[in-house]
Length: 219
Image (cartoon, rainbow, N blue to C red):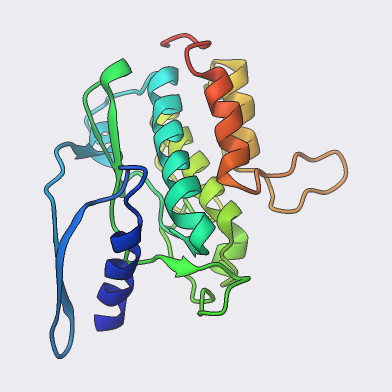
């Protein structure tokens, strides 16, 4: 437990450029655990908003993706870290439409990716929002792409994914370009013949998201 807090503090101390992650005020280690003090963040979780019947617009979802992908690209993945638990419970939102604010919380599952030297091999994450390779203990940056795409799917459809075997019904996503984006984010890590391959990096997905921002409707 203490190691988890220490790991979270270490990541937060350096994940400051994007402004997407919590601001760490102080960290205090005790004999058995740690105490993290972070700046208070206004808002509610994506899960809470979905639970009360709210349906996010295409542009709100794209804005969320833009913010979180930027954080991954700037602050986490270049340092070899994988969040490993992006889900509706760990993304906070405040406001609506063009004024939507987005923050990512809960770094307790952060690990070094499977190509690193520190163990990133322990399975972690939220059922329904983790790709197969992560449950097998091989989290890589593209694993965060899947989790983020699955979260976007829930924001658009109102469906909460509960198991790794839940199937996506992409026909529920009305905008064709948004549908294509989410399908690519949640595609297999290694595509077979005639299959789409998942985005391998946050930067790759971010390029497509920014092309789409402002070009889709608000439905």
